[in-house]
Amino acid sequence: MSAVFNQSVDDAISSAVGLFNRLVDDARCEMADDRLSRVFSALADPTRRDIVARLAAGDATVNELAEPYEVTVQAVSKHIRVLEDAGLVSRGRDAQRRPCRLEAEVFDLMTKWIERYRREAEERFRLLDAVLEQTAEQPATGAPTKEAAS
Image (cartoon, rainbow, N blue to C red; front, side):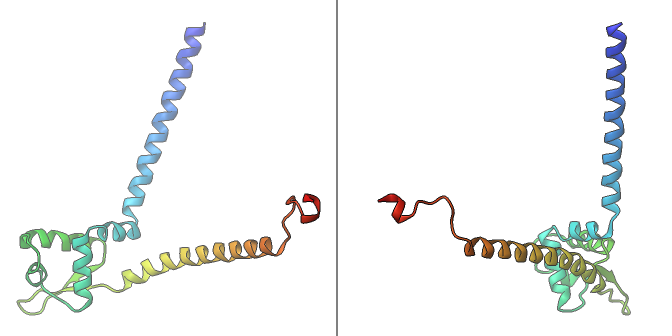
């Protein structure tokens, strides 16, 4: 009888663990598809951040962007592709020239996200300041007075 019970418990636990793992995998996929996640992921690489900084100064071709790096043009092109997939960069066409251009609206998305958490952090700091101020104004209790010590 206990063997049947143990097997039922093991089956239930196994089923629950499988379901949990599938939910975690689904959440990861959803997060990876999230535009903001793609943007931050693209900017995690220092070369891509440098490319974005250079494009902030003006449009440039892949060859122009590849000049300062000791990697192939193809490697820089792959970095640009990641930036394109995240929506940070677009490629245009100007006769034979194909300049890369920085897409500013993605930075608005990032700024809104960062600003939201900055405001929340500032509010927590204001509340902490109020508590500390209130604590400083109250006399300490439990400390012996000069009269009690003599």
